[in-house]
Amino acid sequence: MKILVINCGSSSLKYQLFDMDENKLLAKGICDKIGNELSGFKYVVITGIDEDGKEIEAKEFEKLHIADHSVAIDLVLKKLVNKETGVIADIKEISAVGHRVLHGGEKFNGSVLVDEKVKEAIRECFDLGPLHNPANLMGIECCEKVMPRVPQVAVFDTGFHATMPDYAYMYALPYKYYEKYGIRRYGFHGTSHRFVSKRCIELLGGKAEGTRIVTCHLGNGSSISAVKDGKCLDTTMGVTPLEGIMMGTRCGSIDPAIVPIIMKKENLTPDEIDDVMNKQSGMLGVTEKTNDNREIEEMAKNGDKRAQLVESMLCHQLTKYIGGFAAAMGGVDAVVFTGGIGENNPHYRTRVAEKLAFLGTAIDEEANGKRGKEIEISVPGSKVKLFVIPTNEELMIAQDTFEIVSE
Ligand code: AMP
Image (cartoon, rainbow, N blue to C red):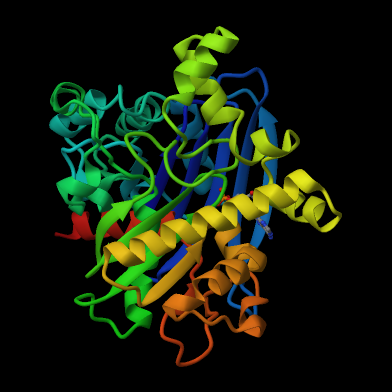
């Protein structure tokens, strides 16, 4: 069975085509700057697997005008069936489409087959995910138009966190805001936290009951989750993906009183302060130069004080969240690092493991030096296991879609 995975942003469309029988990725790519005069179209065919198990890719780039998301989907489908570079003979080979949807509010605790009610519920969450949900719904509607008989499945970023108890998801604000506007912690990156915690449970022996795992998804956006008995107990992101640990351009958790203070002093509107916190803060805000962790690593090595400060802030916050979640779960059996930074930056992992040594973490530096693959990086027999597990949100979406349409 072939499953197409779609992740629609307001001006972009990412896609991956999986062969679920062979359990492999066939092709992937992105259409970006949709609606601009010159949009970009990237098409990547997986031609094989190298000795390290990594996919070998053949890439094509094209600059052309992609008027809207329907045109983008049409373009993707045409490329997938192209006689020379395509990977399937006919669009009919695609059995289902899985869509990444940011916000499911309180309605969804898992992935669902899309129908009119589901679309309405995604629409009802526009207020909670104003940048993503409209684009996600547009992706679904475009696919329905181009592939009218193919089932569509919605996989929510918030879904995995639906098991959080009320004492973890409620904010100490007037209760009426929860009732009137749904103001509560929802959490994001759920597909990633689910993927890596599931894999971690397999590595711990396969039984979810009794396991206490902290999953750290560290990328341009970052979040940390406490996963007890295979279920999310708590997570750092909140009603939006702004809360929690500092990120590339997002400030993460700050004293909420800062918001009115800066608004008054700088004469900012709500939209402007929102932009400051989401796009001008985090690593970019502190360095005043970059949100790219690779550049920050390099700058810190060369003695840049702000880059060194960012590294120390991040390690400090990471340690606090892991330690706090360990306490909330009554202990911790494993910590998982994933995402662009979590998978590739051994320096943070070492610093955090050293700080958490009192809990029983001990890092194996040789294993920690290996980049970009699944590996245990703790010393054999250490009380708390440390793992690097590369995340694969698209595969998780494909698996959910496969399960739902196979029922
Ligand atoms: P993501 O949002 O998961 O794609 O992660 C993006 C972040 O990961 C950026 O800050 C990158 O600088 C960082 N990153 C990606 N690859 C590496 C690498 N090889 N070494 C260090 N950081 C990396």
